[in-house]
Length: 313
Image (cartoon, rainbow, N blue to C red):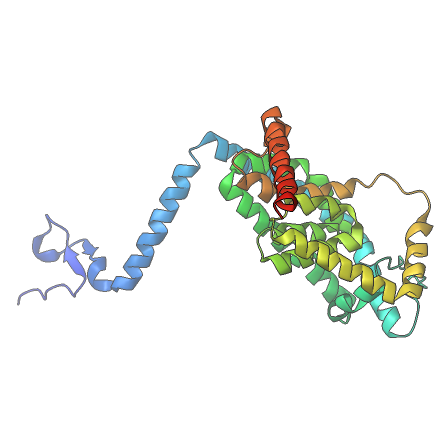
């Protein structure tokens, strides 16, 4: 009786008699071509990542980011249920407003809502959720968006990104703990640099009318986005004038807090400058005298052109 040949995909190891003993699997027969192609992609990706990790700067960046994330996470866990006071103010303010109450002077353990009255409907879809669900969506959604921006920056400048994230660790953690909208507005300013002019201008205008700190970021927006930003800001002013009685109450509530400590959580807005810096070949050119001379020459050229046109007419 002769031995049956090994099934397809199996080959006897050389040196064994009639295929007895160990058997080697030929994956080209067992696994389909598409699976082999995907496996090859994964292998190449793993090799590429392994080669990157041999770079000391990337290793330092990964270690620094890991330490920073660990510190932020430990702080959030330590705070536990004590967090979310600011987000709860937005949530409660909308519910009080829907029930006919005054969101700027709430009753109960809530901070007052202090933003424009016409912005209340913007929070309504989120505020209709139970608090535990709303707080989970608010915090987790913010973390995911923040991680996306960190990933974008890390792919371009790993070590620089790790250092910036480490420097901003406390503002990140503070805003994630309280649920203050500063971090969301920072991400809106980040998005305004990548979206179209109309949407980018709207994002900047909304962020500016809520906090006013983002007004300085008009300079880093794309040139076509700035006019739209000013247009939407004018619309925001108009809406506040249309709701003037409630706007006066809002301002009274806003300035009624009295003396407030230094807002270190506002430092988080510096994160919105990262795309602008990373995409410029020379981000600090505005500090050089050569750039100032170029600006002066450009202004002279425009001024001379403006004078000649009326004279020619």
